[in-house]
Amino acid sequence: QVQLVESGGGLVQPGGSLRLSCAASGSIFSIRLMGWYRQAPGKQRDYVAGITSGGITNYADSVKGRFTISRDNAKNTVYLQMNSLKPEDTAVYYCKSTGAYSIGSWGQGTQVTVSS
Figure 1 (tube, helix red, strand yellow):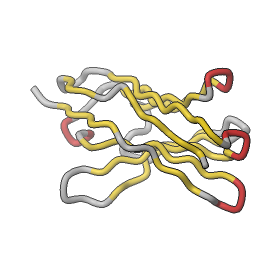
Figure 2 (tube, rainbow, N blue to C red; figure 1 turned 90 degrees about the horizontal axis):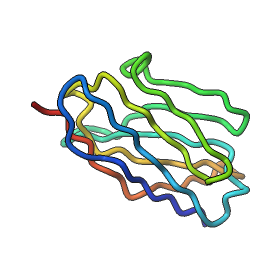
Figure 3 (cartoon, helix red, strand yellow; figure 1 turned 90 degrees about the vertical axis):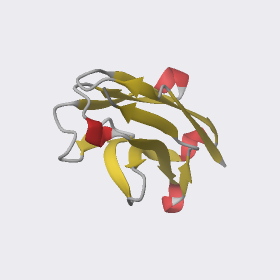
Figure 4 (cartoon, rainbow, N blue to C red; figure 1 turned 120 degrees about the vertical axis):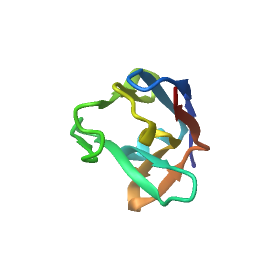
């Protein structure tokens, strides 16, 4: 009942920056946690960052100090600011919401490619 649409992916050189957006619609009042995950070709889907309804953030060790998750409640949108990008950051990035009864919803994903 929650629909998520990611945007902002693309091709960037190492050391560059991108900002991903995740727009939520549907039963948005049920959302308690928003997060970003990524999946590289042939790899498992890994946790990247999360933000709670209270504004508490958490990051995977691999992105600490480089990525920042934030939200704009007025726009029902969560962002992932990615700086100092590395080739190993290349992946499809997915937005996920967690609501009441631990019900989760996923976006369709957006491709991020870091290459020279």
